Image (cartoon, rainbow, N blue to C red):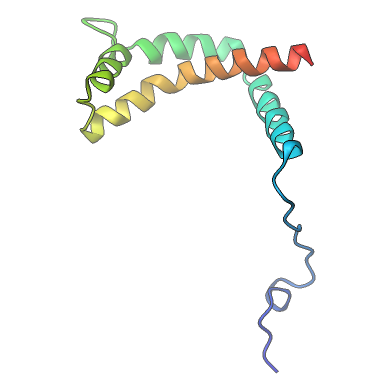
Length: 107
């Protein structure tokens, strides 16, 4: 007799049933995001955003250069897209910590 279910391979395991997406799922995601951003200390975020986000400082920070390329529609090279992601990520984390920190404080 052949077994076609996952219990034959993984033993007895109860897989979670899928629930319909609703308001509760959004609330759970917001709580998870706020907990994630609470764990990142400001002492790590601020220097990362200032040093990595604005490097190199002369003649123009990479983030400003890449944003200018993005707005102008000239951000097409993979290295430019990588630079935008690399230099913009610390600022997105600062923004996320600010936004989700205020939501958690207001609740």
